Length: 165
Image 1 (cartoon, rainbow, N blue to C red):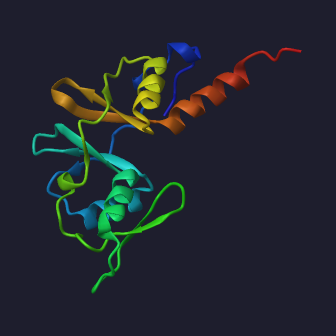
Image 2 (image 1 turned 180 degrees about the horizontal axis):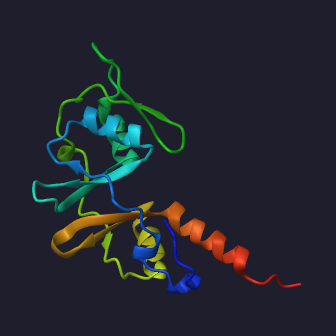
Image 3 (image 1 turned 180 degrees about the vertical axis):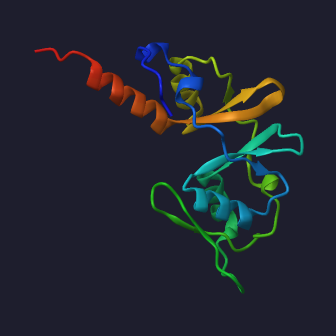
């Protein structure tokens, strides 16, 4: 969350990121990961190994890809679903106990805390993604910057800018 009064183009990942970031251990089941994301009101989080190093990211896009691959079969027991940011409900039923590392997006887009806002935006545009992970030495996530964080900074900068008349 932005707490800086820096000019817009001087903002960095550290200025915009949400920290601490929720992480999902690689052994977590798909069902439990859906619950974690849903309870936290977020659509994605980094997947980490036992030392806390980032291995990938699990997001609503991964759930959609999983569902398209046949994961939408009817459940015989508890029904668990995940609501995507665009309002689609994805049922997590076919492989609810499989580990998230089988469904995550490997090699996530990462940046250092000092990465400028322009670099963040360009990485999101180039990779067609809505979040970048902010990592420190050893690939450990320390925060996350979403497209909404960047847009909020743009909106704040626009409110402060003098109006042309």
